Every structure is written in C-alpha cells, then in structure tokens.
Image (cartoon, rainbow, N blue to C red; front, side):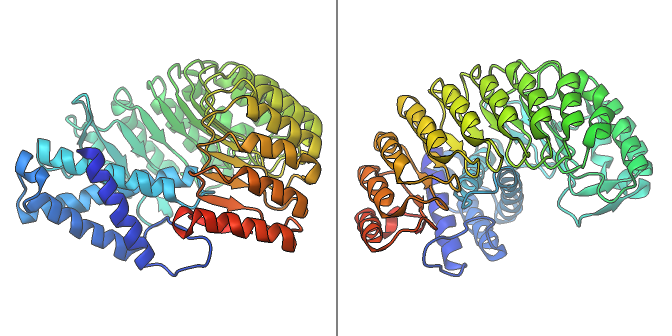
Length: 486
C-alpha cells in the first residue's frame, strides 16, 4: 500500500516539476522542486489526509485543520531529508532526491493516519515503534549565531522529554558565546544522539575562535554513540581535525563519516587515520574536494583497509596522483561490500587505473562507479572495463568521461556494457572515441532497456557515428530518457 502511494506521489511530483520548469531539449534538472511545486504537494497531501480514500477508509481521516498542519510538516521533513541527500550527491539530475522526497512523504502520510498527527517537534515513528526526531536549525539565513540566539534556538533540546536523535547545526556560524551555550545542552542529550551534522558551522570565524568552538563541541559530544558524523565544509585542516580529536577517538559505532571540502591536506589525512581508530562498522566515507595528494591518500588508504563493511567511498577532487591512486586501489580490494565508488577528478594515470581494475573485479555488489577525469587513457580504461565485465552484474551508473579514451578501447567497453542490463546512466563524454568507437558503444547499448541517461559529448563524432546514436535514441523513445548529451 505504501508503495502504491509512493508511486503516485513520484508521478505527481515529476509531473508538477515538469509543468513548473522550463522545458529543455535534452536534460532536465529535477531537484530542487520549485516553491509552487512544494505548495501543490502540500495541498495534495492535505486532501489525502482529510478526504475519503482507500487509506482513510482503513485508518480514519484527519480534520481539515489537522491535515493541513500535518501536510506542511510532512513536506518540510521530506524536503529536508531529500535535500540533504542531494547535497551529498550533487552530480546527478536530482531524480534520486525526488524519489526519496516522495518516499518520505508517503511514509509520513501513512504514519499520520495510522498513529495520529505528526507532532510539531517532528517526531516520526519508525518501523519498530521507536520515536526518531530531527532537530534542525539549518533552514534560516546563513548567518552568525551568538549566545542569546543560541539560547532561544536550542531551547527544545533542554526539554527532558525530547526524543531527538538527530541534530543538524549546519549553515549557522557558531561563535564562542553560542558554543558555550550549546556545550551543556549537547552534553545532556548526547546519549540519545545517533546522527550529528556540524557541516559549515564556523564559517567566517577567526581561526583561533573556530578552533576553540570545535574543541567545545568535541568535548560536549565525547562518548556519544553516533552512527553518522558530518564535519564537511569547515576548512578543518590538521588543526581542525585534531580539535575534534576527543570526539573522533570516542567513536566505536560510526557508520557514516563526511569530511568533504575540509582542507584535508597530507597532515590532516594522517590526523584522520590516527584519530578515527575504530572503523569496523563504517559504511560511508566521503572526502570530496580536499587537497589530500599522494601522501594524504596513503593515510586515507589505511582507514579504508580498516573498513571492511565500506559501501560508499568518495575521494573525488583530492589531487591524488599515481602513487596515491595505487594505494587507495589496493586498500579497496578488501571492501567486499562496496556499492558506490567515486574517485573523479584526480591524476591517477594508467598505473593506478590498472591497480583499480584489480579491486573492481572483486566488487560483485557495486552499483555506481564514477571514474571521470582520471587520465586512465586506453590501457587503464580497458583494464577497468575488463574488470567490470567480470563483476558488477547490478551496475547502474558508469562514468568514464575525460580519460583520453580512443577507439582502441571501444571494443572492451562495448563488451563490458552489453551485459549490464541494469545500467541507467552512462557518461563517456570528453573522450576521443570518434565514429568507430561511438558505433561500437551504441551497438552494445541496444538491449539495455533500463538506460535513462547517455553522455557522449565532445568525442569527435561525425556523421556516421551520429546516425547510429540517433537511431539508438529513437529506439529507446523520448519517454526512455531523462536526458542525453551527444
């Protein structure tokens, strides 16, 4: 029943977003939804909660006032969850965020009908009946927060009966006064907390003040049994990482760690490896957009080696060269549960590409592989393609753009692709495949009925290759693609 409702909501949201967005010839950015779309969704949910439907007949309905209030809160909670997901995965068209948005809406609608209205503190019953709550102050303007405002904003956390297990302090810059207000409050609730988001929470502060603020938060949260910790967008560097040392050292159950856009240099990476000693349960590790370099990658590889349950590893745009790429690749060989790998925009080169292929051949569960702009060239690309051909039966996304791939590698790529029946997105743009390579790739895609997005731009493709690609797109039909770039 929930699935039926979710599919209906997805269809409605997609239709509304297309109606309220400018139509483009090839690709449509699906996230974020317009304000008008969000308002229309609230109206639709209000109706679902208060008028006769198969769901209200089974569970009972809410009054119009209750339905409207709950619809607004449900939409806000769902939007927050989807937007946080999209911010961590900003490179797609947003379709995954839309799916999550609809899923959360449908889940909360049913919970409101089954268990009564969602409370104003956003308490949401989970499947096992335990109350889960998100305390989020990130939705206001991106601004400094001082002691007086902190007292007001954090007041709900002082309520001894609160059930908050997740906090998000992102997008607000804490000064020393605000941090000192937060310290005893966080200490009092830390035993309940499962997820802490402190991304972008010291912006614009002088270094000395920022370090002291981080020390305060670290000490306040020491010993919290966290599953997820997000310290992204804080320009940490080694000093910042060490400022969070007390908190990091106390973690033994972390499943998700985000350190994106944090100035993670060689020394900072070593500090991470030193201060996060327990990673046996880690499933998500993300280091996007740092200045890690080869030496830093060696340190990160030690963390990866200690993370046998890793499912999602992102080390994109981190200035890693061949030596670091080889080290990371060798470390990934032990991650048998890997589902998503993003190493884009580094300087791996052929040697690291070949080393990576030895890891990929062991990853039977991998679903998404992002390897664009790694200087793999033909030899590295062929090695990767041959590895994925032997593994990854459920592969949905493959990106190999900007790797100087020529027709010499097209045959290996085609042989790999033709067996990937679950492939949804393929990006081979900014290579040198030319007509010969484009034709081979196109022929390999004919039977892939799940394919929704294809990028072959800037490949020196002329008339012969363009004709074959155009024929392929016609065969899939306009309804089959979110977007294509040829």
